[in-house]
Image (cartoon, rainbow, N blue to C red; front, side, top):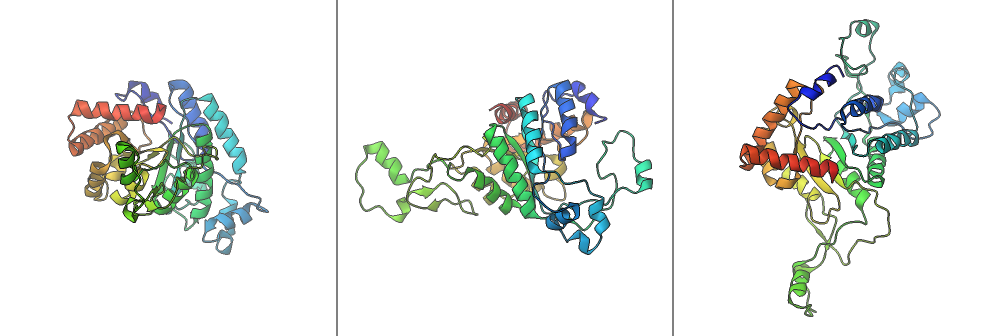
Length: 350
């Protein structure tokens, strides 16, 4: 938060500001109120567990009480997910251009240990309270099924309010896709076979010897991104829209075959992919990232800093990723920046 005052002096003309913790939503609201940027959403708890320790035994792995019951006691008290979603809904109503995010799934994340008294008194000035701040990581992870339940609820809220979402996924690409696709099941767009397209073009001739090659395709692609053959449309039109109209998979780290599932013609959400130097070109991942970027349609690309510090550092990071994107796609710099700016407006504003 100490860097927020530098936003008006930045070269970037617009920012989508997000938090990754429920307790930071109010901070993002403060920024949105002051600078006219965007609001966020993040997970909490839903259930009727008998108590705090029972809850954390249920959602963390390994079970804390079997190793260190004091760990659960040091965590914040669980809150009903319904209460949290209502707070988020009210914030979204207050900020009509707000998106929902950053939300998602993360198999690698481990909870940090509690701050010691020494760490608490020696913390750096200017850091937003509640971050890791050098604390050791515990062995405890949030079970992916619990994460997916919360993500689904947030996606449905975004769908009801017709807001875009920014989605985080680490070591969970299959579960992430299944959770997102589950929200739009029954609303897939019809995909015509080659034979159907030919019939429309030539006056609906009767082809009674239709083969498997010309069968209708199910709107839901399989895990490899290939359409599945079925009979019928699959679009019942009987369910309310419980999926976001636009989705950004931020700092996308999946493979080309995985992204094909999201850009399949049957997908009713418009899915974007954003990239950051901090994540996508780190640890030798540049070659894979560039292959993926070349495979993404020009109108589905976004750039981001993925940094928590605004100002010159963020501007520099955004410039670097814009230049990399232009080089990979063969765009001139002005052309590329215009394309990326237009994509951001389409993602945020529709």
